[in-house]
Image (tube, rainbow, N blue to C red; front, side):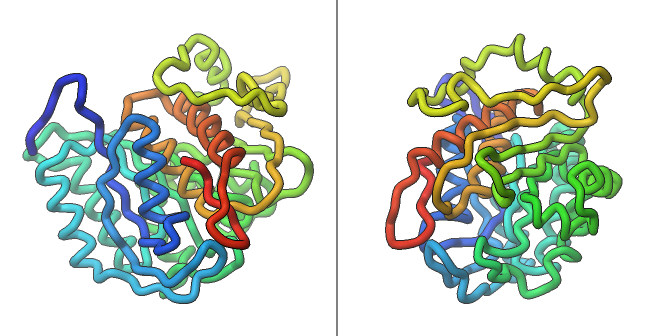
Length: 307
C-alpha cells in the first residue's frame, strides 16, 4: 500500500453496497455523498438490483469471493480511512465483509488500525418494503454488528434488529451486541419534526464539544428555511448526564430515494477526515437535511436528494 500526500490528496472510504440502476441509492448515492464531504469512495459491489426510484423488483448477490477480490485489490494500494456498508446481498457476503474488516484492522503489512471506523446502514428492505437480500437480512448482519462504529437504523430497522419497541431499549440491545454508537433516525415516524437519537460513549459532553469545534471543515449553503437554519434544535438533556443526544429536524414533505444511504455515507466521509464522532454526526445531518430540501424528481414517486 502506498501513501500519498499533498493538498490534493483525499482520504478513502471503502464502500460495500448494491448497484441501483436508478442512481438514487446504493453505490451511486454513496459515492456522491462521500465526495461531498471531501473524501473519495472506493465502491465494492455486493449485489446487482432491478429497481427504479420507487420499487425493487429483483436482487442478484455478487459471489462472496468476487466481493473479497474487489476489496483486496483496493486495500492493496489505497489507504482506507473508513468503511461504509449498505446492503450485503447475502449472509455469505456479510460474513466475508466481517472477516475482511478484522483483517484490515489488524494486518501486519501496514500500521494496524484497530479503531478503523465502520458505518453500517442496516438496510432490511426498500421504502416500500421490498426485500434486498436473498437471506434473512437481520440474521445476515449478525457478524457485522460487533465491528460497527456507527449503526444508522431507522425506527423499523432498530425494532427488527433489537426486538424492542422503544428507542432507549433498542439502542441498549444493539450496543450490547457490539455496536459502539447507534443513531436511530426518525424519518418513519409521525409529526411535524423528525427526531434522531444518538446513543454511545461521549454523548454526555457532546454538546460542549460541538460548541467548541469550528464547522469550517465542511460548509453547506444556508437557504434560510425553517428551524434548521444555523443548526438543529437540540432537546434539553435533563439534569443528569444524558444517555443519548437528540436532534430535531423539520419534516420535509414527500418521499426520498436513498436518504439512508446518504446519511451513512456522509458520516463515513466525515469520520474518514478524522473528525470526532459527535462532529461527524452533526455535520452529516446538516448535509442530509440540505440534500433532501433541494431534492429533485426523475419520475413520479420518490425524489432524489441533491447530493
